[in-house]
Image (cartoon, rainbow, N blue to C red; front, side):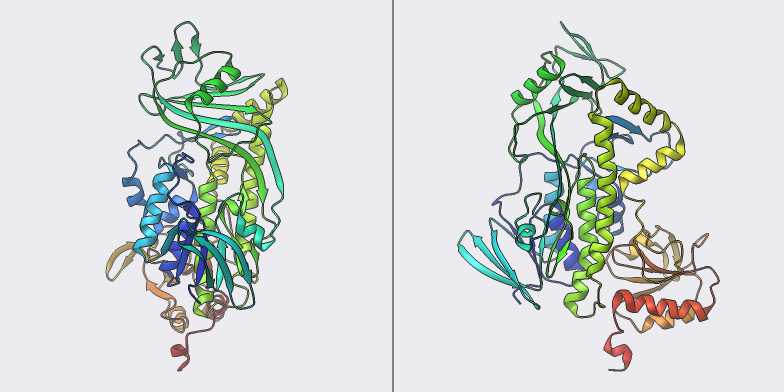
Length: 514
């Protein structure tokens, strides 16, 4: 094999996958058809569960240092209204204002630091597979060539060539909405009022928030001093290339059509246009070809695609690497679809609900939005919607019966006291290795897990209010198994052995005396 895994697409999903594969000891090759990194503005930040995962990899501080924008308040768009979580002491949803171009740059740097091969200007034109490998035909700057690998992963966006080559159906809906977003400086001729409204000479007051007219929706805000955030939605029959740059005049014309007014603007800072789709691949795997990110799912709302795509990568990487290393148990790679397809469907579920909330313009639709906002006055409802958007309400299905309540969930970042000092669950997962965390000094459990060393790390620690006697944590920070507090060894030990074998294969030969 030339490489272990070929990744097509150097967006956030592909680059995150490359870095995770290198952490797991696999050899990825990233092929991107664009010769240079993308310049067209896309997402303006990331949020949700992926921020917790980046913290668990030790990357969040690095990403936070790369943004100069202030941390926005915990107020998030949802179906044409706003979910205000600022009253919660511990918001379930957080965002990092990091433009996608900068995010991709950081992920590219990280992947290369770890030894990934990233080639730009290399386009995949064909691919074929057999029982042992995938052969990829590539058109590069120096001419055509072939690459063989164990697996081919399509992270190449909505019009995925890899998905098409694999014959994976991508059913769903394309909505007629065309969304335009602009950040511009505030011109001297207008005044931003204390309540966020805009006083425009000759036009009067333009209200902050969303304004609905017969022609569409207009949005106005200024969360950053000196900057206006402008947004429009119109139904149009015209097809647009979301990657094509949008001129300022296009945004101005759209605002004029929606509001019936010409709004003064300063210098453009960021301009983008996007359309909405609700689509999901019927399956995420076809033999040795898999899809992730926008190649696997498209959501009809903003703010969730990066979270979903990068979490796809984290879930998939360690399973691919285990297969490449030869110790993956039967069916491990199939759990990528089993876990991430329902997660994508869950995101599709709430983003389609947002379509219903935002697209209506009659009194009944206005009443629906008002009722929704009234319900969000309750703390429990706020938390429920916040976790839904963040993707933190996902619990992966675990094999076998009688699971601990933590099994399948994202591991809590417990503060851990060890003989070497104080650490945390997040710090233990920086290297993306499986961990057995003994929280109750259980030598019977540690002895069982030793058969899987060094594949699985073993740590003993104490923590306040321990949630379990022991946790078996996967590289993607999800709990594969947990022993109940004071669970007897005659049930905990065989259950742990079954979980270790089910997720991480048979013990290494050295553990078997080989």
